[in-house]
Image 1 (tube, rainbow, N blue to C red):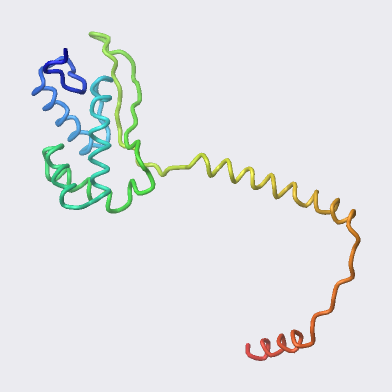
Image 2 (image 1 turned 120 degrees about the horizontal axis):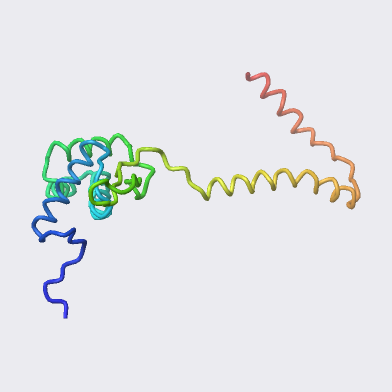
Length: 175
């Protein structure tokens, strides 16, 4: 049976302490853009940070109130909403955080990581692949064109109608 089982990581404490710890870590990360913490804690706050930034990108009053409830500090939320309004994460649809492993801590061998906000612009992988394919197709096209032209009989170019020739000098005179 699943009596009193809540979703999410417990992080070795009771529910109220876990909630307070996550709120504090989210506020610290948003205020300083980079914090050093344990791997399990970083993985636990990552969805909360992503959710706050998504609310900031939306930018309406309801989203701001939800973010204040999640972070607990109006000034930090105001700064995050201003960054989002300036377009810091405009081209990014998710993945606003990065976790870099530092290794085990000396005293208890706990896994220590740095979690930071990602501010670089997104470089789409699909666009890079298609542009390379287009370049290859363009390079192949001139090689194929002479072979096709040699197989077909060449027709003499037709002369343009006299009306078209008269229209061109009028355009030049207008300039």
